[in-house]
Structure formats: C-alpha cells, structure tokens
Length: 202
Image: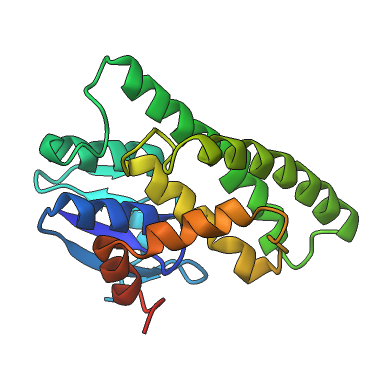
C-alpha cells in the first residue's frame, strides 16, 4: 500500500499507525498548496478531495479520511491491538474518540492556520479548544492513553493534533498533562520513525 502524506498534517497519524502495525508500505509526499505529488502528478486526480491522507491499496482502491484510514490499517494487523474487535463496545469507544478528535479538535484548528482569519474568530476558537483540552486532560488523568492502559490508533491522531499548537503559537501551559502525554507518545519507536521520515525530527 501507498500512503499519500504531507509532513505534520493529519496524515502523520496514519503514518504512525502503519509503522506501529509493521505493514510494508511506500510514501508519497503531497504539496497541499500546488496539489502536486513529489513525482509531479496532479493529486486531485488521485484524490479529488485534495487533502491527505489517502491510502492506495494493493487492489487499486483508494481510501481517504483519517479516521477510516486509521481503522483500515489497524484491522490489517489485529494482533497489534491498535483498534478493538469490530462490534465490541471498546471499538465503539475508540471510534468515539476518533470522531471527537476529528470534529472537536482537528477542525477547530483550521481557522488558526489561515492568515486571513479575524482575531475575534481566532480568540473564539481558542476558547473552544481550551474546553476540549480540559476534557481530554481529565481523561488522561485516569489512564495513560485515550482508550485505557495501552496505545491505540486514536492516540496517534491526538498526538498529531497536539503538535499543531507549536505552529499556530497556542500556549499549552494550562494543560501540563497534555505535554506529558505528547512526550510519552513521541518516545515510541514507531512514532520516532514516522517523524524522522517526514523530516520532523532530526
């Protein structure tokens, strides 16, 4: 399979999970401004949505949307326990986290990345994110990872999103637990490999 990615974007979550799963894969970098792949292809002809991640399967199919890609990769190596068994309550809890991260954290960062967003809107977004960070912090006080005692795919997604405050200058000192969590995830060998591969870690 081939993972289309852009360094540090939400595709990093898929990159981490595919490393954690130990599945053979190739990478193709996408310039999201020009919509060109590193080989000069028009990315919109590969994925008409125009954003990452996209996962090209060996049968020629293409999967997109990070929450779906994470689950697909995880299900290829059930022995790694990156997602619980389909149909189990634990699986639904993990899907609940994927949905929360996607809608309540990931998408709330979008206005902060746009230079033309009015300051008033940015302040509103920061307040909203603060409430979401409070909720996540409370969860991580009860156990080291989102779904309990072990790392799972939602942790790869949350870790990715928690890197973004560095880029948009969000002060995270009010949530020291999130900083500890981020450092804990960053120390994992699979995460280190993904970060180095994307040029995010020397």
